[in-house]
Image (cartoon, rainbow, N blue to C red; front, side, top):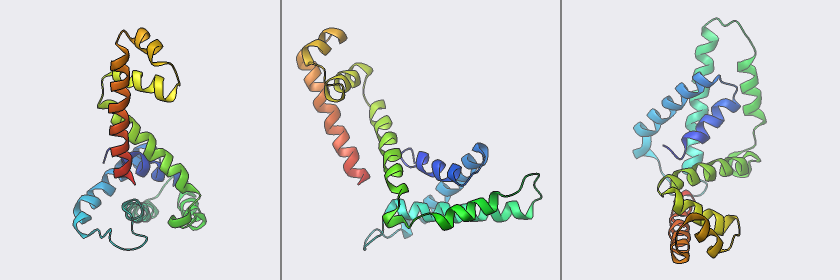
Length: 168
């Protein structure tokens, strides 16, 4: 849930739901996921968890807008905006939004992995691997040995590879 929550929330906000309603709908989506998870069939071409999750989210959004249509509202147009956005949205298999969604999932995954490590370990990894700094300089700045910098880099990279493999 931690990995996919930002993505589902993003889909809800893209459908122009207010933040509070998007948070509520997020809970409804994951209630449905928990209930139907046993029925999810990832075997077969074109069946991905993210696609299945998007379908559940779209169905919950439709339910939301149907409920809103029955309840008088001071502002109008959101139902039509959502339906228009849904109609204009490219198919999930070749979506232009797919790259943005992948970046969102990657960012979420990075944050989750980062929480698994002490700040010094993460900083050693980040500065050497992403920042391109020399390990000796990073070791001096962080007050650790150069071997600890290399160990931190190795541990974090290993964990990131595992997390990204799970994401794929």
